[in-house]
Image (tube, rainbow, N blue to C red; front, side, top):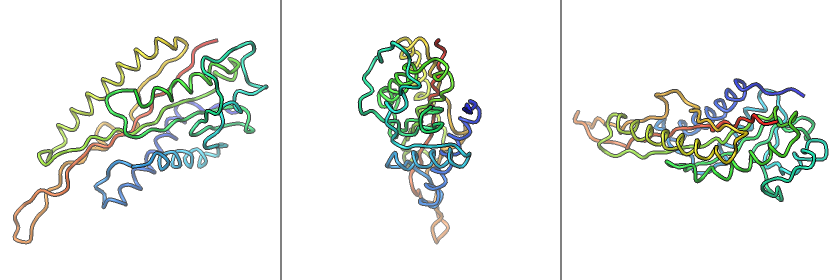
Length: 231
């Protein structure tokens, strides 16, 4: 069973994000913008794993991962696995989980939209035998979009808004981690510090005068990396 290194895991998530942002750039004449459906990002991340030769499943039923070979003996999951599914699961022989990824869009300055995803992944991981749990990479990948206004002809105000969102999410993750002491939940941007920020356009009219064009925006992508340190 080939464990995915953390560095490769993050690189694959970045590749999936890049596929999505490139697609949106082509659709919008390189103005960029948010995707309107999670499945675009989900499919792009799945393709990124496939490109690295990994066995990928989309909408994988979690109880098939916590199976007779992998489940922790005498353990009762905190939450019933039931019909829960993982957006993306990377497996070995379709039985042994190597990576779990959940995808969300429309996330603001709170973890409210990704909380259940984080709980779901942690619940699956701690339900596995430690030797299997230790090999699983997991992440909640999500999009944050901040709409700009006509006055945002530079990106400074957008950067300030995004910085506040990042700090608010990081603070909530620390509080969330108290309920899952065997785990860490770390916020990782999937873009460089300057990517994803677009100022309001300035158009040049036929007479040479300037006019405001399409409003700017910040569209950023992140991963909350879920680390397991239990026994």
